[in-house]
Image (cartoon, helix red, strand yellow):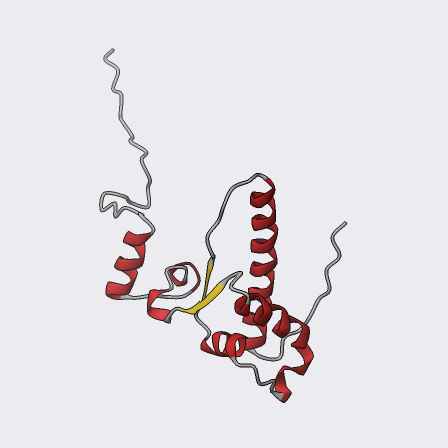
Length: 139
């Protein structure tokens, strides 16, 4: 039985932090499963484009604005300190997933498209691949 609690985040950092918590719980579950199957794993890397999330995960000082997600804060910090996972900042210019959610122009679009291995098809038209042939019958 899955019980979820709907939470309204007060900042983008809090929302991203809650996302990191979900990712870490999934990672912990997968590592537990793999260890039961006797498969060794390395320390997983989790990437975030929010620098505030990365700084909060390593800063031992609690801030007054984090008290409403303090349990999540301690959960992530403990796993980072015990090297169960590594949280790394990735600048927005390297976020390949942005091509799916944001308007991206020029060279960045081409670079992200190529990284996703989507091929450029210059022969594609709005008509698709429908070919009309006219058959003229002779009487």
